Image: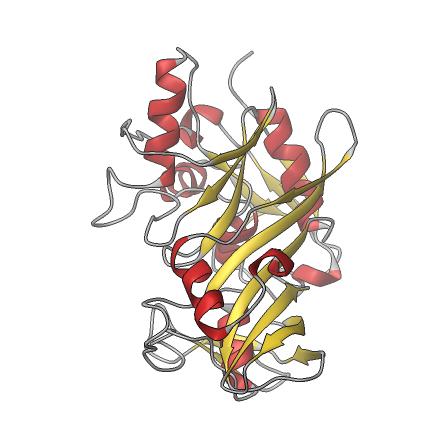
Length: 308
């Protein structure tokens, strides 16, 4: 086997209008090193048979071809002896309950303290070759389930399912104010002008389509514990949408204010539902609230057992 894992993906309506760079990084979980490698190849990234840059905008029906090289995907991740909370593992996938404050993968200023570093150490102890193939990625200060594929075939199948909208994610969030009814937020999102990080709601003819469904689990009148299900997967989607409707997440200083209840955005990926890449079985994983999210629930009088 030559290490190649070419992918051919038909773009669906869910990805229509999305920037190719965001799709490759956020939806397919590609690293900076792998993107650089693909861009260097004549046939690395093509849409409808034509070589494109990562600035291309996807359209429904486009055929995206990626001449992936698994060696490039295995960027140099240094092993780090970091405690891991493994909630599921078999020969094809491993899922972890990532704590808040831990980046998912190495980046500037975080070369040795990420989930990827911890997994590199974990597999090194087992003498198993390691390539970090994260199916979903969480912000550093968002806790919860991160699913990682152990091999190329599993990564391809699960990534393809994600591109079709087949992976269902559920979050538990604590929002400022009282929310008494379930609802759906449909509002396009784009990067805020001159900001690398911050996103904002924008008119329908701008940005990317985004849809978020939410339901209240408990409120003390000042804070509401919510179950949130993002239908689309835009950067900061839940945080932006909840702030947009007047209920920013507790502790979210980017889109709201500091909170005495928690020192980061109160957001936890509690449930992940997907099709197993080998058996075809529908898998449902759950991750309990821990640490600061658990303490927040107790302080507002919420039933933690009913929150996951």
